Amino acid sequence: MATSKNSSNGKKNSGKDGSGATIWATDPGDLLLVGPTFDLSSLDRAATPGWTGDDDAADAFRLQRGELLSEMQERLFAQARAGGGTRSVLLVVQGLDTAGKGGIIRHVAGLMDPQGLALRSFGAPTAEELRHHYLWRVRRSLPTPGKVGIFDRSHYEDVLVVRVNHLADVDWDKRFDEINRFEKQVVDGGTVIVKVALMVSREEQGLRLMERLDRPNKNWKFNPGDVDTRSKWDDYQAAYQVMLVNTSTHYAPWHVIPADNKWYARVAVTELLAQALASLELTWPTVPWQVEDQKRRLAATMDPATLVKAAESAATEAEEVHEETAAHADDVREVNELAAVDANGGASPEVAWGDDVAQEDTVAATAEGDQPASGGQPAPAAEAQSGGKGKKKDRKKGKSGKK
Ligand code: ATP
Image 1 (cartoon, rainbow, N blue to C red):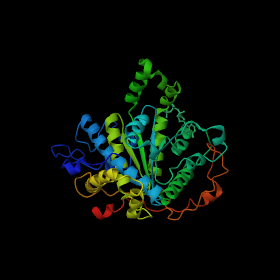
Image 2: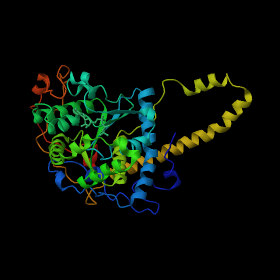
Image 3: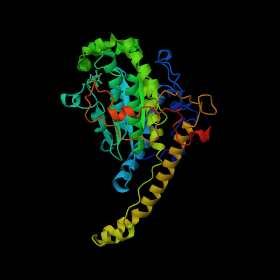
Image 4: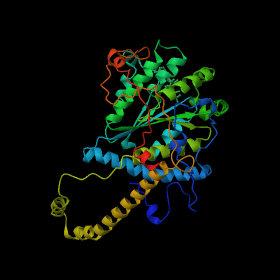
């Protein structure tokens, strides 16, 4: 098991480099957050908001955070397996071709134990999926308790590619409301949703596509359809803009990640994921049996020499766990502290959420089962709920208290 021992060695593994200088000057969770005034057209896609180190520092820091991610994921898994835990995390990764979705999955999700992950890629719907409502395949792919789910593309394709290519006659506002209600249900069910949109510049996309053609070992990654999609660049940007501002809610906010620098996108998403897991305040589960009873039973099956060995290592094991637990608590505290740091170096900025997103507190199940996928209008029961509107607010637990 990977553990976070750095802190116990006196070496900070969060927000600081070896010399104690701050690397994350500002919480990327705040800097990259999409609010109602968000303007995609003014995003500098080569920027590295909040990061004061270089690319090597980012890679090193990401690996350090990986130790923490790994332990938090194991606790999440253990809680569900042995402690009846119901929590899970879902990372939704959106982005145009070459934006780096695959890299995020390899370099961020890859920091964790594959046994605790549930990866799902969403391509064009199959014949069977097309017979159902567009959320049908998404519901079936949600992470079960204890898992970190990763969506490589998602239901957001149903307001992006479907919209740009006019694949269905849809009331987009209703569809946004429907997605918001769906995600509210998922969050209420115990899942923390982290949504990241990787935004690469047009120039960088051109270069990355050309590289796929120039390098024989990358030809397989190229799809002639990528050029068709690229030719609709402006339409996609417009679809992303309206999607982002309409579906960034306090319970499932969007973070837009400038992605021309792959190293930045990876370290930023790592931090967002670490914040999501840290917010769960995960502990190791307690077991429903007596440890001492089980020790006695096990000892009865062991020979005396082996029992002496076990007794010798017992104290060390306990001490190690004690240190690891303290180090973990330190690391989690640091992640949470960074999450409380604001873009202006003081209080977190007010996120002026708009009024245009449905914010029902109580959400009934949407009756989506019989609706066709890409052409799917919201089902009647779902449509009936779309009236409730309200103010969005900062979703981060306890955040306002830290302002
Ligand atoms: P990627 O481009 O994500 O690396 P890929 O090129 O290997 O993946 P697939 O994963 O098979 O292709 O499918 C991705 C394609 O499926 C994208 O072009 C995406 O727009 C499309 N797609 C995803 N969801 C839908 C949908 N609901 N309706 C139509 N097309 C969709």
